[in-house]
Amino acid sequence: MNKSIQDSLAVYQTDTGALKLKSDIEKDTIWASLKQISQLFERNKSTISRHIKNIFEEWELKEKEVVAKSATTTKHGAIKGKTQTKKVKYYNLDMILSVGYQD
Image 1 (cartoon, rainbow, N blue to C red):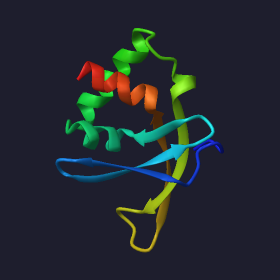
Image 2: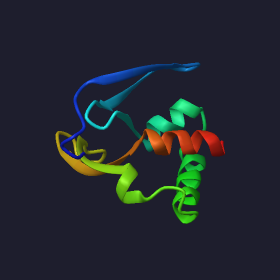
Image 3: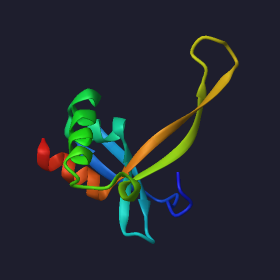
Image 4: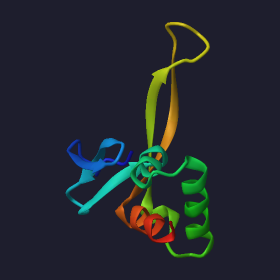
């Protein structure tokens, strides 16, 4: 994730529970992963992914302006005691609102 994203959290309550999102005080925004956006709108990840794809294809938002990537370390699914690193995309508030508008 880019260095401007702070460690503070914004907490939102959905029907299925609390959702914690990274907040960026410098840029006055919040950041959410695809999984978090799908939880927020209570839709599956493929539906949200399709909305995001459409938003970029229609030039509603520019990817470089609304996406930050972060390396995340998780337990390896197949090898016990091993970890793996994967890059996760985080989308800012502009994207979250655009997805909500399309939903």
